[in-house]
Length: 207
Image (tube, rainbow, N blue to C red; front, top):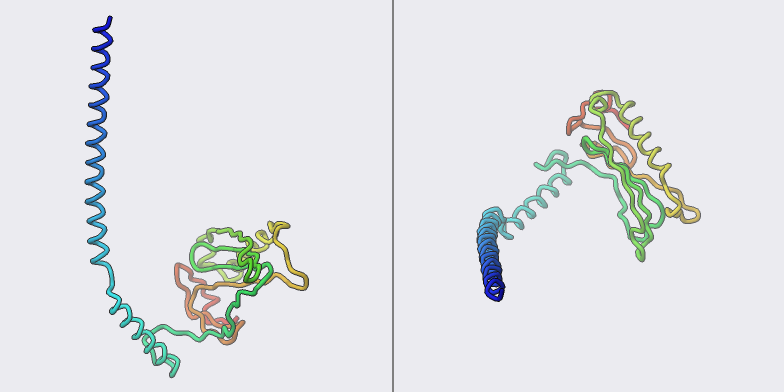
């Protein structure tokens, strides 16, 4: 009986040792693979990295081109369009704000509660919708009706935890990520569509 137990113990010990050897070999092999992968990534990073001096040259060249564009119409190689935004956020903003983001095949609506410098962003919710392909080449009325309905549906989901300060109204911002020649803070003409949109009755139409 004792011999059987001893043999069993030896067999178990041998099995454990064999398993330990296999695990160790696997870890060493994995470690070597990881080391090799790290070396490849380091090499790729070095080859793709742009020297700081070169980045500064690019920044300086862009600054020169921007000044040239501001000095005269068409004086810059950069694509520059006038913006009438004359005010920047201060951080003191409080209230409920909505945003529309149209910049591709997806359209996003966002709701945010701002609490000023102390609370910053109190709460934020958003919803993303795919724009049906036929609306990207249809009429402007169809596209903007879709946007308006999406906004209206999103507004109805506003919960009681979004608190509007006394005397304040909800405000709305619209990101229209297409080249527009602005005529004022609230008007402009679309130069051309990009990103798969092709709605002819909007191009060069003043809003």
